[in-house]
Each structure stands twice: as C-alpha cells, then as structure tokens.
Length: 65
Length: 402
Image (cartoon, rainbow over all chains, first blue to last red; front, side):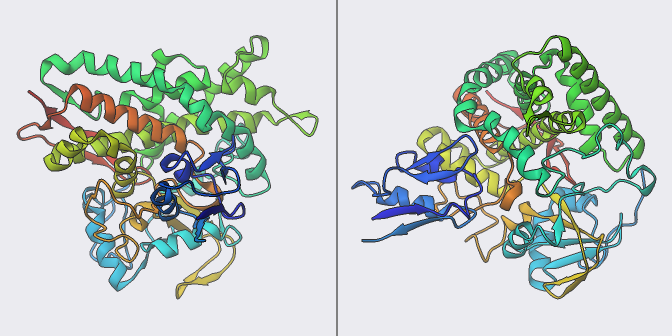
C-alpha cells in the first residue's frame, strides 16, 4: 500500500499529519507530503485509510498494491 | 441595535441573529436541507445561506465568483462602509483579500502557526490552563466559558503578537464588540477604532524597539526588496487578534458544554485519553464556531439561485458539518468518528491560518480540565447563554463539580 498527497488539492489542514505523523510530513506552510516514497509500513494501513477519510480537500489517496 | 421582526419563513427570510437560530441552528438547517438547501434573506442586505456540505465547499473553492473582500456575516451599514480605509486600506489580509494579495500575505503568516511553532506554545498554554483551574477548582463551581475558555486563547495570541497579557480583558472586549455585538453599529465602530489605535501605537513603539514578535516582523518584512505597506502589516496583526480569540474560546466552551451535558462522552474521554485526537475533530465538527461570508463578484446562478453581484453568501461551515448526506448520524457526537472530512476551519485557499494553534489550544484546554475535573455537570438551574452570528459558542456556562 502507498499513500499520495495531491499538492494541487492540499490546503494545509494537516489532518493527515495529526492522525498519522508516521506517514506524512508537513512543511512550515502546512502543506503535507508522504514520508519517503509513500510506502505504508505494515501495521499502519488503518492509519493511512483514516488519513484519507479525514482530508477535507480529498487530497490524500491510498494506492493498494 | 436594529430590531427586526421574528422569522416565519426560514427559506426566504432567515435571520442568523434570531434567538432560535442562535440557540439551535441545527434544526433549522435540517429543515432547509430538505426543502430549500440555499436559503435567502433581504435582512441586512441580500444574503444567501447554503446548508449542504457540497454547496459550501464548492462555493469556497470558486474564488472567481465568490470574493473574500467582504467577510463580515453581519455587514457594515452603508454609512460606515469604507470607514477605516485610510488606516487599513486592505482590511485584514489575508482573510479579507483575494489572490494575489491573499497569496503573499498568507505566506507571511503561516510559518508563525506551523506545527513546529505551535509545539513551542504548548507549555505556555498548559501553564495558563493549570493556573486558571487552580483559581476555581476548590470552589466546586466555575463559569467554564467566561472563567476558563475565554481566558486561554487571548493570552496565547498576546504572547505571539508581543503585546501585554495584562491587557487580555481589553482585547477580548474589542473583539467581542467587533464580532459578537456587530449588529450594534456604535459598539462595533468603537471596538474597531480602539483596537486599531492600539496597534498603531504598538507599531510606532516597534520602530525604535523592534522585538522578535509577530507584529515587529510584519512591520519590517520586505517583499520584492521593499518594506511592506504599513496598512497591510497592521491589518494582518489585527487579524491575528480578531480571528484568534473568540473563535477558539467558543470551540473550547462548546466542547465543555457538550461534556457537561453528555456524561457518557465525558466518562469515555476520561477513561480513554487516546481518543483525544479523534474526539477533538468530532467536537470541532459538531460545534464548529465560525461562519464566514463571501461577496458575489458577478451575476451567477448557483444551485438554481439567481445570485447578483454584491450579494453575500454565508459560508455555513457549521451547517455543512451537520449534513447527513456526508456524515452518518450527523447530529450525534461520535467521539471516535473515523470518517470526518469536517470543514470547521474552512475549505479551499482560506483554510484557517491558525488551525494548528486552535487545535492545540482546544486539546490542552480539555486535557487539563479533564485531568483536574473529570466529573462535572451543569449547575442546577444554570442559564447557559450562547452567542451567534459570525462565531457561535457559550458565553455563560455555569458548571459544578464535587
């Protein structure tokens, strides 16, 4: 499983970072990016789905392998 | 203050200041969503009120047709439209602006409220909360709104701006005059004038003694090789105070009201502190304090409504967050709600610049309260009063605890 943040949609709500700081980085302007190449470590799949389900801008997506 | 008639037709003649709307807007939105999802009124100027999540978020993103040049829910009278333009020619950027001004002024502000910076304000916030609780914990009763919630955000904001914490009550008074009592023109103008006069004095002091606070930085910021317009620096600093005080205080107060009146949720949150991150978001969803406004830039039909240039549209984020099409059991607080794309902090390019700070303050305020006062309820015969309009939250919240 991988996660991806669409930089054109992200408005810096930082909901993903708040719920899954292991999976997302956030910069000084609030914009989120996936940590590393976005691969979700085993055991964190539910966190990744939670981040998707809480993004008000529909900017976070999960790509199932 | 203008006295308007009671409301008989919520679809065609709504009034956000009507007592029943301030007390229980939820029932009114539920009715409108199924009958007339975008309501209209001519009270205080032609104004539209969307109640569905999809409409509120779509309008928020359509900055071409819906401008932020006018954001007051209770609009200024025509006679004082333009008042203050000499001092604040751009209002309170970035909130009262569109791109390109919005874009670069927002970039000045955001780093002050980044996750990293906000972590640095956490110890100060916790000390503040602890000190306030020390003051009433032995009495067995408190006004959780005026004696607690109201006291917290203004002091954190004063610290960030570099203005004296001792003036907190004065700042709170000005902000309430501007937002809560905006329908009283005299009070609104007086509060606004005093607030701006204060910032002008503080700015003059910083010419000779710049500090490391936000106001000093704004006054000395250079963009494209030139110091930014003083009116922009003052407007942005004033915005931080105006937007950072009764918004967050209202969220803290509403959350404590919920926990005082829903013992099951209170007990669960005490027993399961790990729920806090999700619970905070759910309380923000259910009791979103802030409604903003937009002004229609050119005649446009939206959702079958003939919106005219100059009309206002209320960005009903609180109503969007109660839309049952988006949120299952929308009118029920579910502390561990997993699907929660709430827009309490707005949607699109004007997402609240202080959202990280507000969320931290709300979390610390609840954590410290529940740690010290895990059992509490409304006082017998308590008369809870709510403010509404631009910002909704309890203003008097008498609670008792053993």
